[in-house]
Image (cartoon, rainbow, N blue to C red; front, side, top):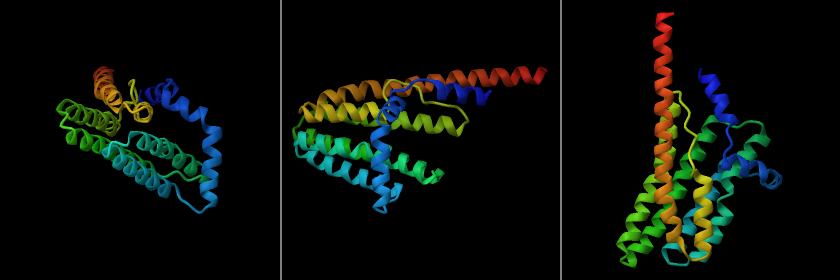
Length: 216
């Protein structure tokens, strides 16, 4: 039953998978170049984090265009490190774990920079929205992690990390980051709820299947 669910999950279309396949022709040469430089996938993961922190600093200063451009450069590193691991032929479980953890730090630093800016502007509504957006972003990933820890899948939802990064980059560059915050605050939490309901459905089906099995 779980194998069928995993196969079904893999066959489902997702924007993140679409983006990775679409830009594979760009990611693979970049990954190969970094490997020739002697970099490891984890080094590139850390480099992406550093760029996110720098972008957060500029966002906190209100220099949204600079922050957006830096984030535009740094965000794709999340895909490049995976491409490097595949080219090495040895993607590791720790590598995937480390990448996921660093992704959360990158997002939280970015949200922290925006929170610092809006607190300095005495914009209470915007500050609250940043907190809600940060909570939603973390919960999307946490729900998936907890679900997979219980042998369920939870990749559904309309706002994964890729969509969140695109929204942040786009609206930072045009100087309207609050629009991105509104989008993430609403849709990230909606995505978390989608995943919770999806896991609930799987759990009910699993429990029902186990009950039937006891009578076979």
